[in-house]
Length: 473
Image (cartoon, rainbow, N blue to C red; front, top):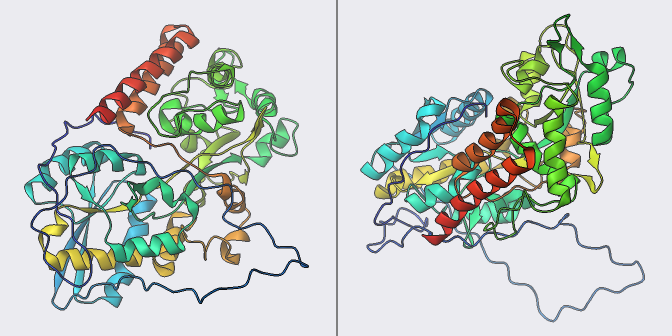
């Protein structure tokens, strides 16, 4: 996301409606309070597959037949019902959800889903103004990093058991990013992680026949691929680094590649300035502009846009960029995708998603709640996931889909799929404010010449203060 917004002042709702989703039961009279101090779902193991059993080893004898617990039934909507879905102005995600809505309404002709697209800069404030007043969306697209804050503010409620059961049974381990206190709060529309986009023609022109496999090689290739005019201005960036765009997101993968850690496992401690590895990763990013001269501020609208225009040679980008490049690459621009380069401690990626959440407003009307539940269940289904990811160019969230030939045979999607087992994401208490802490520390170095390590410590202190305040509530 390229834009920033001023975070709205939180309006904490005194109570929040929580309903079970077995039919169209009315909301409970005494709804529980929103989660205030979330217990984070632990990151998944590197792989879900159990260790193989040796061929000579007999399986353990079963003492009794396992009892299968039936998943909660989805509700029924017996009368015409309209629900509102909100999302921000977000390119391919708009058309992705449009495709999902159109098919859903064919299957449920008595349910109308009204899709409203709101400018990104207005999205948070409109949510804050509408939902507490009982208006606005029944279902909303949220960045996963906003879920904890929206929950604490009372804007959203846990998913009904019938939808949570689908996620727990069918979704990839990355589903942990939308879970708190043992409850699911969002349906992942897709899984997005980082891989390396590169222009093979520009790399060949610079003397390289393959993309860099390590971050050291990345700098070497970027320097050779950079072109300047007679005044020293960059005309072709080896890598245009836009920290305020997605640069600040893949930075956390770099921290791990150098042996550091961005945050503690419980999310309470900011660690991106702790240890030699984390500090080396930060200096590596600063050097793109100040030392290696492969990038310059405001070189282009953004990293991905510059790459699509053929003005840069390489860029780490999220999965959605496959769809963006497919639809927006300038004529003659060739591009391919490779796994993220490796650092001293290995190769790492970072993930994210824009899940759909259920608002507390939906719980006020049993019919809307039932209709919203059916829509979220459809988004979680194989059909819903396929419709969305085929438009956006992203990766489905379901275990039974990520290995399908239509995805794995796509050379540009395969690097993302191959990195799925190691894809994880940090817990954000207030992603927008924390993002601003990071951008301010980067800008202080690049634009004012401040000491990189001093500003890194200041940025970490800024982030820690936000986390301390969140967990103290």
